[in-house]
Amino acid sequence: MDFYLAAVLQGLCFSGLALGIYLSMKIFNIPDITTDGSYTLGGTVTGIMLAAHIPQGFILPAVLLSGGVAGGITGFIHTKLRINALLAGILVMTALYSVNLTLMGRSNLPLLAFANLFGNWALTGSQGPDSLIVLLVITAALVFLLGYVLRTDFGIAMRATGNSESMVRALGVNTDRMKITGLAMANALTATSGYLVVQLQGFADINMGIGIVITGLGSVVIGETIIRRFRVVQPVSVLAILLAGAVLFQLALAVTLTLGIDPTLLKLVTALFVLLIVSLPRIFQSRTA
Image 1 (cartoon, rainbow, N blue to C red):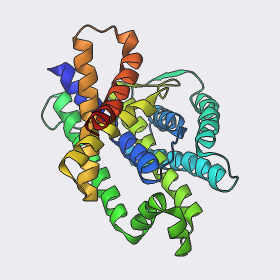
Image 2 (tube, rainbow, N blue to C red):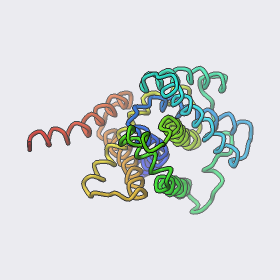
Image 3 (cartoon, rainbow, N blue to C red):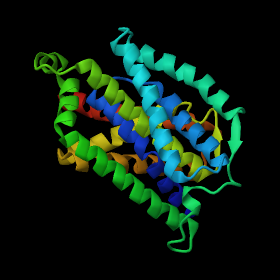
């Protein structure tokens, strides 16, 4: 049971990642590979600030700012320098590897000896349920905050930019600014996942972000399948289902491991699982056509 609770906690930690992928890939139609670097950047900033005994109230804003800057740089390269969005993300992700390594000063930073977000609460007397409650509060706050933003005029303009950029530009909206802001928000959310995962697992690692975009994409695809099935349109409900998708994705991987799959093959299993959930709807659609 503790094994599956750990999977749920991991899925909730990836809530920011799922929301960030949703913003970049589904709202703006931009395949943003900056995710791999900004996720690690969030963990790196968290690790060095925890090691310096800086209060939590300062760590999260710093994480959001660092992720936002990373995403904003990708957006600037894409919109102002007219570089392909995929290439812009790869360039920033590559640069962030050196940035993260320089900030940490080593490839791995252990943090078990330092107080963290999950050690400051004694709500039920058990660490697992306490961590679950903390994560539920944080993810709920993320959902309602982002849901509110998407319902504002600014959020509607963001969604319209992804749907029909030329139409929005004709209405006088600066689409370049929208893309830069959107990618900054997406990577700030992704960095939040790094912030949570590092504190949950007790260490920051330079390679923790490798392939993490696949995890986020799998979460979004599962969430979108549920959204289409039940025809959900309300922004808050859509975002909440995306978080459920992140949890379900981690639970599916947990079940796979309990079946005896070698943990060293987890990345391969993750890639195959994402391929499966992406391709199955299209296969069924082609058969019914």
